[in-house]
Length: 489
Image (tube, rainbow, N blue to C red; front, side):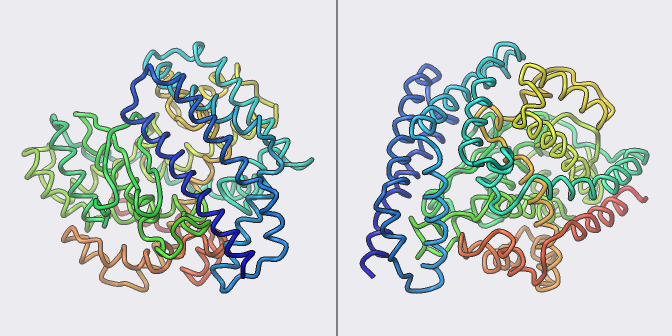
């Protein structure tokens, strides 16, 4: 198998360099001096140039023509390398490097514009990012749908029409449930001041409870929480607001879900195409099931209530039940990452429709803020008060991640399917969560989903874990049952 072995040796070096490039991105969003941004942009462009050259090396085509895989994992690796080789050969090296350079600059400029509440200052750069991504989409689509070409980078096999149809089917039940919840008596809120150091200490304890391995990971602070890396170096970030401890705690649990997926992939896949999550939808299924079906469950919040009282004293709620209701408080807020489970998917639907229109050329970037504000008022019944609560709240468009947003809602759908299967297979999940021990749940997820990495396609991954094709019904039924109980509907 010399061709297969030569190909995999080449791929391991490419994967290693990709991890180095990812570490540059982690550094930029955590500890890099602000003044380093122009130089970092050039560094990122240079790295992307090297990676693009390796991913389009003509020898890959020669190897693929004759390589014979020794097993099913090898077959999957060849499939993924072939898909990557075909994709990257459609994108000119100049464009790949320019996208890396511009999106690196854009990230820092977005953070400043967000802090200054200044959309106008950022629009020229966002126009540049969108133009480059449309150019890339045109190269990838070869006459097909531009948005689908970008979506395929994050969710292979998905298309915008099918996702749009699924969202249209989900929306009426979500809107009806939200109307009934918001008409009910509001859930209580926690109250007090929650010092940064104490929040971070508790977030580390919670991360350990969900199985995050600090021997190969760490927690840092960032404007927008994220997970970075794979294999034996998987880092997460969180953020802290001293009047809102849930921002830190649940951002941490969410990113731990992503990180545990990467940490738990079979180590024999390390630095191969199988060594990372198979898609962003499947990735998001892990972060959302950790955060919501496990982390916001009545069992786990009962344990967390005691931890909060120990760390912060009086937090304004006097019982485990009221704390559970406070954690799951539903309201029409501005921020996607802080949205309750009922409203969250409606935030995604808004972004999905706007970015599809942008990539199609039906919505100009200069008109994006007005379109966002009008749609938000229609969907949520409140007016956007400032850009950081509107168009500037997410980092995704500034760094060129068009096509990424729908994978969040798709991840919720997958999480609904996985939760139903997990609870059928492991009936004592809640008993462990009530002790602050998620081992029963995380072990099932590790064995059913995480260890397999990129072995199967996204839909195959969920179907293999659950025994059925994924669909929205388990998620919608879970939400209706949970919030009917919480709000006595």
